[in-house]
Amino acid sequence: QVQLVESGGGLVQAGGSLRLSCAASGSINVMGWYRQAPGKQRELVAGISNGGSTKYADSVKGRFTISRDNSKNTVYLQMNSLKPEDTAVYYCNSGRTIRQAMGVLPVRYDYWGQGTQVTVPS
Image (cartoon, rainbow, N blue to C red; front, side, top):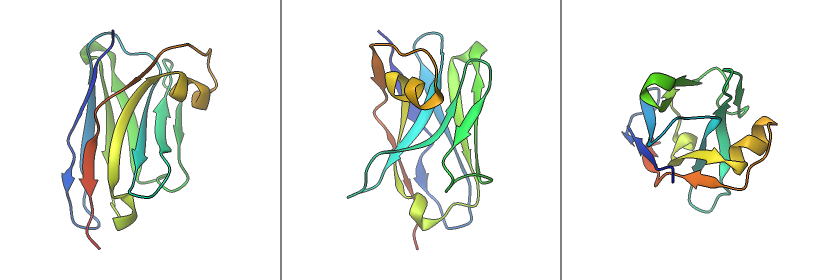
């Protein structure tokens, strides 16, 4: 059973930066970050494959960077030039959701972290 724990969220002024971390209890494979704002659908923010290929939502391209450290079983999301519309709960995912988004072999399991809040006041 894989456990995912997000950290690094907080309240940041517009234009500021945050780095989110997702620590896994075991080896990481295809990983992704999703976010959900109140009244909005959950959406893909960024994903990264085992080989290092990345995928980003158009709204965050050029501002956010996803990376991985396999030795630490951790995935990161560096967020720069934050905007009020980035306010949401950010979730880490490993399993069928991100694997489908990245176009890799599907699996039956789907693991999610508890989420970390990011708030950017307007």
